[in-house]
Amino acid sequence: MYSRLLYGGRITLGMVVAVVVLVAPLGLAVGCVAGYAGGIWDRLLMRVTDIFLAFPRLILALAFVAALRPGVTSAVAAIALTAWPPYARLARAETLGLRGTDFIAAVRLCGATPGRIVLRHIAPLCLPSLIVRVTLDMSSIILTAAGLGFLGMGAQPPSPEWGAMIATARRFILEQWWVPTAPGLAIFVASLAFNLLGDGLRDVLDPKQGV
Image 1: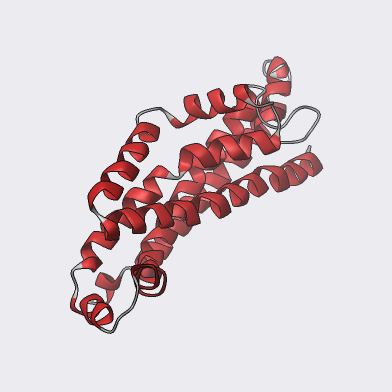
Image 2: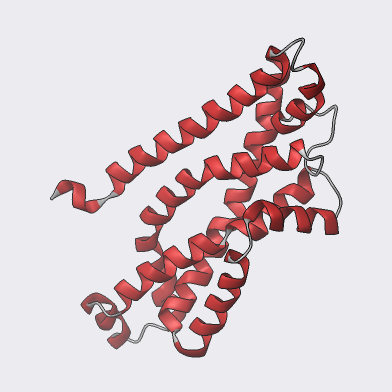
């Protein structure tokens, strides 16, 4: 069980890293473009974001996986498609606050293109808040990935993914309760660790802490 938990951690945490690598740049790009461009682009991108936010993440992920094929790759793609809207909203809010600042006006007067302004000046300033949000959101990504595995839509048995391990061991819960409890505790500890890491990063990266 211990070896399966450790190997299953590679699968579950690997799915989390893959989702973060996919959704963080996408959400940052959508939010920065919407916040800086404004007008029709802002309304269009935010309405698409609102459509994704209107559905619960797990339900929407289940629909995407059912439309594809159960497996780790499908689960990562489904979670990524449902996890980017909060990052886009956060990046848009940060961009709206930066768009009217004096240094952005100075860069614009120097002849910088909108793409260069967003890429070189606005996006780097949005990264601290985005990093904190991504770290805090990793726990919910773990729960979503484990939920998909438990429902048979993620990693397939006998793959030692934590959610799939709970699903295959639930029939032993009365006789051998520690078999499904161990992966559940692993999910709890990993989620708690990412939450604590996010709180620590927020204290470090928040400029108001130094005031």
